[in-house]
Amino acid sequence: GSGVCYGMMGDNLPPANEVVSLYKSNDIMRMRIYNPDQAALQALGNSGIELILGVLHQDLQGLATNASTAQQWVQSNVLNFWPSVKIKHVVVGNEINPVGSSSEFAQYVLPAIQNIYQAIRAQGLQDLIKVTTAIDMTLLGNSYPPSQSYFRTDVRSYLDPIIGYLVYANAPLLANVLPYFSYSNNPIDISLSYALFNSTNVVVWDGQYGYQNLFDAMLDAVHVAIDNTGIGYVEVVVSERGWPNS
Image 1 (cartoon, rainbow, N blue to C red):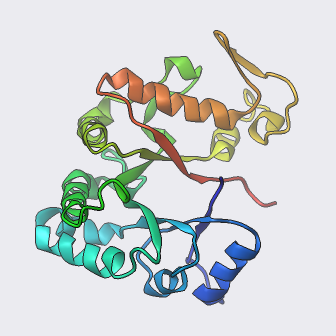
Image 2 (image 1 turned 135 degrees about the horizontal axis):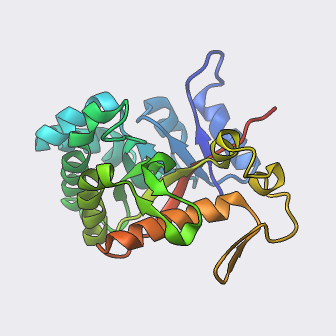
Image 3 (image 1 turned 180 degrees about the vertical axis):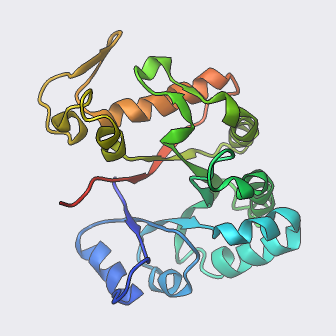
């Protein structure tokens, strides 16, 4: 089933309990929040909504360098609400790029993941609550055709140990797959109908695989890039997708 990201960057936002009611009335049973907003977590209690819970980037260094900080974070934001809030994934870093504008945080992602994982594992919840990170498509050196996809050489020293951890912990990698950006960056080669799920026929053939939409092709590219590291099998969960609303 699909979920919806609950963004809080804005003014005149409805209170969290109204947002949760909106989800339920529309049968949206999965939510992602980008920080452990206490009002949102309280409103989610006994709602049945599965949650992807984010960690603030400014908290990563403390979580990475101090196991007790991670234990406190897990107590305050996970255990205090579990199991009435169905927390499914904890996302340690969103679209952190070791060679991009967020590079200052890159060194903290894996140790923060590990410290949070250990705090969750200490409660015996490691099979129910998976700790991971969310990547964007800029980490791919090539995404077309999907079968030729790979991660950029300059991000492998960052990503490979994370993928190794995910294999060990049986956790998925989260990927933000936004076809609109691919289309807007390359409108000559990419048709709008292909980007918008409107194509009724196969638009792109990649060997035996035919793609009717860009989203499927981008998602497959992430799977192939993981496979091409040779580290092991990791499931991919789409944690964001998006198109402009006008």
